[in-house]
Image 1 (tube, rainbow, N blue to C red):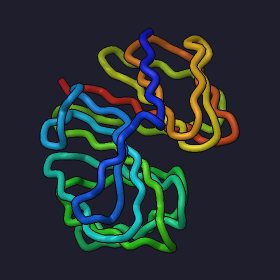
Image 2: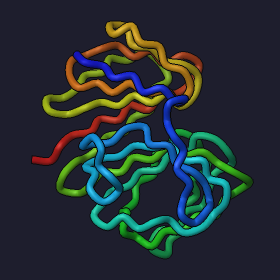
Image 3: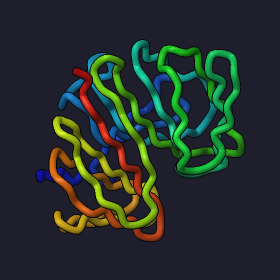
Length: 188
């Protein structure tokens, strides 16, 4: 099993075009792909103000509140409250989407997969659990709160650190918080 550790402090912040916040890419595939040609992309965003979301035709999106009072997302004319931390909300990237903050700045966790090229399964871990990477897939672990460790790999993660696993099985221990377990599978 190969484990790539992705430290939070090593991620550059990219300002949004609308000035409403910044995004830090945790990982993406294929390596070096931009916003127009990724198969999958995972990021954390600091949302400082509401406004329209960028459109991503052909992309499935999942957003999860990490910090703050949350937001109301209006997706294709229907409002959805994203106010409870660690509860993923899925929506199509091409849908007309706007955001209204519910009480100040927020931090959210984002998973995007290009339809027909990749899928994502997202679970939140707050305890000890076995993590197995399916054949041909990858598993990305992102510590959203507290700490986490991988027993076999001997890796410790602090808030917003991540580990990308490309094969095998390990035991994840989430300590005093929540770690996102994202299984990213290619579509054949």
